[in-house]
Length: 189
Image (cartoon, rainbow, N blue to C red):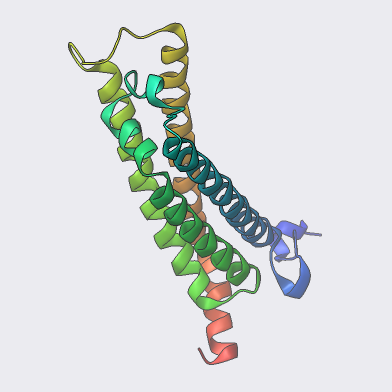
């Protein structure tokens, strides 16, 4: 008697979907919703800052002098950042739903999204390290909070790179390719 994993019946979810496909799809969908909600909060923060600036109060003025140039640019462009984050959240949500429904386009869309996220995470991690190690930087000497923030940024970028690499590897497995190819043949897409 073989194990369920060897017989191809392990972790089957609804519609004959392997459990890991369901987990991946649900995580994408949930992440998309969280990103959309976060973008809305960011937009509210940008609105509040603009309203305060119109009254002659800049709540972030004292903070801007201690930040690196990229962080200052982000603070000055919260509206655009929230719009981009909303768009990325919507794309992530659509990909997650498509992945749950085993749509053929969802596998390659998620792989492309994972590659883009991997590249952005590597660039972000490199930026954090470069800012941290800049010789004679224009900012103040790093504080203990600054070091903790830098280390957290590096750890988060590394974790995101690992997750993206695992997703890409998973999406390229023969089982997943066959599953989504079978759906192409069944749906005619």
